[in-house]
Image (cartoon, rainbow, N blue to C red; front, side, top):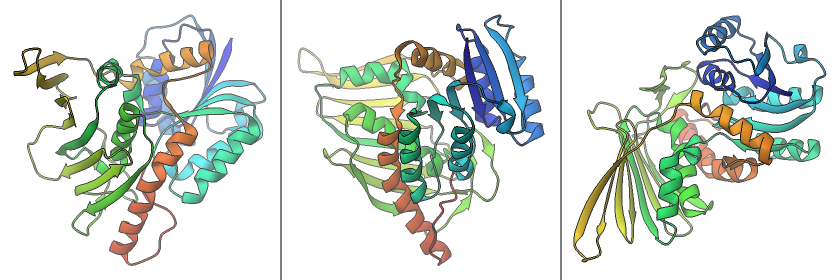
Length: 335
């Protein structure tokens, strides 16, 4: 029997819970959220999944202290970024935790990255950050096919895809494909404006969070350049393009199709297409937890690597928002 704690029962947290409802391991699940409405939504989504005899109990709680003194095998922290350090600190001060999975953006303050790193080390907790594309078959196969190639450029473009929050997904994806975690932001072209957070996927968010429209450019230390563009008013489909010395790859995630162009055996240019399925979070978390329990490891990004990947982006965003608002910021209002 394992114990799983899920803190944060909002839009994403409730999808984690739906996945946990499918566990093949016997488990007790503790779901914690201060918001009673979020807990009710999570209950409803949990009961959308067929009854699973492996899930012995599910407790919906309004405080971390209500968990009690159980040993926690896996803790999933799905709160917004501004509260994540506080939640982690409180949780590990009350219970012993074996493994931890964190959502992103990790934290809004630079100082929190070192604080949580030291806290996890002190408590002997192994932690990963949930960048699920590393778990998708399409990207695992793509990584294998590109292992002998040099990726020179990665471009991401589309409308209302929440660049401020989601750009970290694609920085992580590049790090995964290239095995490189050193990069720098070269330029932010957001028309000197910020907007209330919005995403075509999640809809409107609390207005205290910010979003950008425009482009950002960066470069990994192995000379992989990237350009992320978020359009405000456009019919442009969401497109990821990867250019290597051997091929040009276009990935339309929402359509589930990938095109790969390259030279065939006869040295002529060929374009091949392949379909893929983009798994939902409600189909992944249970698999990730089962692998953690069985192997003590995960394909997800380790905490220290992810923290290193977060910081250049967070620093650039802090500087840009500070210039727009004409004030020095210590907290980046992105989640």
